[in-house]
Structure formats: C-alpha cells, structure tokens
Image (cartoon, rainbow over the protein chains, first blue to last red):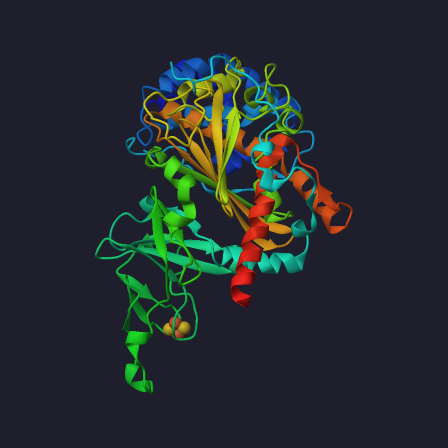
Length: 124
Length: 415
Ligand code: FES
Ligand SMILES: [Fe+2]
C-alpha cells in the first residue's frame, strides 16, 4: 500500500487542514473543554479562523455519512468540527475565550457523554 | 380567528403577581435560604414526601434491565428495575443482611442482584431468593427479607418514586393540572442524552430560582443568550406568561424571532437533529401540549416548567433539558443538568448536538458565581429579605409553596 495514502489525516478535499488534526482532533467532549480552558485565546481564534471558511463544506460532506461508519479520515474531520463547536462561543460570545466572570467549568463536568462517533439509532 | 393568538409580539405588562393576591407583593424573608434548622424541616416535610423524578422508562427497557439513581441529599441509591412481568419497580439498594449495597453498577442487565459482601441474592422482584449457608442462620424468614420497595409511578415516561412508603398523594394528584397540561409532548424522541453534574454552594431553592426568572437575562447573560431570549422589542427580558399550578409552575419565555445567529451557531442550528433550543424555530411535526406556550404567543422560545420541589424541564419545540437539585446542606446543592436531544441521523448532526451541549453549559455556568456570592451574603446575615420584580413571580411562588408544605406537614403531625 502506498505510504502517502495510509498517512492521509483528512479526506482529500480537506487536506489543507491536516496540520490542525494533531492539536484539535480530540478524544471527546471533556478533552475539548480542557483544550479550550488551557489554550491562549489567540490560538483559539487562529483555529476558528482556519476552520470557519471550510465549515459549511465539511458539514455538507459529513451529512452524507453515518456515525459509526466513518473512515479514520472522516472521523478526524468530524472531530475538528466538534472542536469548532466547543470553541465557537469562546470567540462568538466572549471574544476573550472565557466569560469575564467565569465559573470554573471543571466543577460541572459531563457525567454522561454523547460519543463522538457512534450510531445513535433512529428517531422515535 | 382565535383570540388567544397574539397578533404581534408584545411585552407582557407587570401585572402577573396581582393575579395571585394570596402571594402578596411585599418582600420575602431570606431566612429559609440559609437557616440549617429550616433546611432540616424541609427535608422531612418536602423531600421525604414529594414525588421525585428518577429518570426515564427507556433506561430500563427489557426485563432484567436496571438503573441506579443516587440521591445525594440522603446519601441513598435507588434501584429501578424492570421485572420479568414487565413492571418497573424501585428498591432501596440496601441488603437485608447487614446493609451493603446489592448493586454497584450504575446501569445494566441482570437476572437478579447478588450482594457482593456475603452473596445474598435477590430476584428482579426484590424477593430474597438465596442465602449462602442458609442453615447457619437461626430463624431466618426469607419472605420478610426482600429489598425494601419504594412507591413508583410513571408520568409521560418519567419514573418517579416517593421516599415515604405510604405517600399522602398519588403521583397524578401531586402533579395535578401541571402534569395533565404537559401530557403529549414528544419526550420519548429525545434519546441522545448528555448530563452535567456539579456541586454549587447555594441553597437548593436559589438554584431552582436561577432558571425561573428571565429578568437577569439581558444583564447577566449579556454575552450569550441576551439576544435570543431578550432583544430590542423586549429589553428587560419580560416573560410571555407564567402559570402557577398547585406547587408547580410553568413560564413561557419570550424569544427574539429576528435573532441572527453567529456563524458557527448558525451552522449548528442548520445541522441540529431537531430545532435547537434557542433557535426560535418551532418543529411543526410536534404538536405542543396545552401547557406549553399556553397563550400560543408567536414570539415564544421555551417554557420553563418547574416540578416541585427539585426538578425543572426546559422545553422547546425540538429538544428539552432538565435540571435537578439535590440539597446537601442549607447552602450546598448537587445540580444535575441532563439534555435530551433528537438522535443524529448523519455525522454532521453530531456537530449540531455538540453546539447544544456547549452553549447550554456555557450559558448556565454564567449563573453560578452569582449564586455563590448570594449565598455568602445570606450566610453572613447581610440579606434579610428578597425584593421581587413582578416577573420574578416564580420565586415568590416557590417561597410560599415551600412554607406551606412545611407548615401543613408539621400541623398534620401534631394533630
Ligand atoms: S450485607 Fe449483603 S450479604 Fe451480607
Ligand atoms: Fe441565568
């Protein structure tokens, strides 16, 4: 198998975002919150600015695909988008990354998490 | 034309409280919000007597399925189990031998419960089925040693229990008009579940109140939900309406129909598996029950339906979430926020769900420092009374209901 193919981190159309995968395709919702709390706002903004122009296209791409049946590249793209969801309010609501009178979000953790990439069954 | 449909968005006048003369309009004493002695009376009169929500029927679908609900207030865990006969039952998770918990898992499937201490085994119906080395006991009457069963009743797929083995009301009587008016909502469609939990240094009633007035929305939430739940046409976050129903209450929250979402938020609304809670979009497939947006206002966003004493369902047309408060002391509460989203039918909708989880958490955490500061002021004796705005009627109502439950119970005991 050609090495180039197996090492692709994202679907081809999104390969321009590959350098973001290592830092921003994270394990789960809790890891994304931790990333937000520990990343300087300038870095969050840089991530947001890179992702936003591709976001609509990424969602249109993911809308054709099923949770639980994603390739590793598709899953990495989804995870970048989930990080964008976590970072969204940091920029769009607060601008400074955190609410000015921020309560420590670690004091209110997720105890039941929605998995990133598992089929959720059909709507009842 | 239906007169009850408002023709255009309008701001509700400040006359809600006047419809309930028995509640008065003056200040409310602050003592019940810090006094440990009063708190102890609340536990006896309210938390040990009111129906308390444990979860959903879907958490134990088939015979042998069970889930455990912790009640931090009493350091108790309740087992909810579906029996072979298909019935749900609730038990104290306490072994009749020497009191160990018979089940340690939070949820699962089993044929019965075997206590991990000495191995006493109970059936799904709670009956004591087997005792290792039974001959070694003197006068053991297994028939009398089943798990203690708690009263369990179901409303709209939500499982309620009562810690009083002989409740003074049925669940239906307890929920009354409030329950009846919310029947028919599509609760069962919210199968993608997430839950946050934390301890906040505040009185449990203040935590409830935190979600029961929108007067603070334009100020405290100025960075986040101000423009969705208030807006130029409703600058002070007036409610659409509030209805008091026995000890419970429902308030309809105004929504800004001209809200323009932020870029990421807008994409999330587009790809959410159902209308997002603050998107202002009403799901035409779900018929709203009578008690939801009861005035049928066009500029409606959500109803905050408070179930006495410690449970709130925030209901939009496409998703809902609940808050539950379990007091630990007069100035400390375990707060659980549980979201019920429609399941994602494709990978992009997982992004919409994540946005709901994140924005909801961010917005509600804005309330928490305020709550802890208020509690410090209360504990230091610096506030003797609360002064309530007309649209803070829910807070006034809760005060009166709590007082009435405590006083009625204590009177019934002394006669
Ligand atoms: S305490 Fe359960 S078997 Fe002994
Ligand atoms: Fe709030």
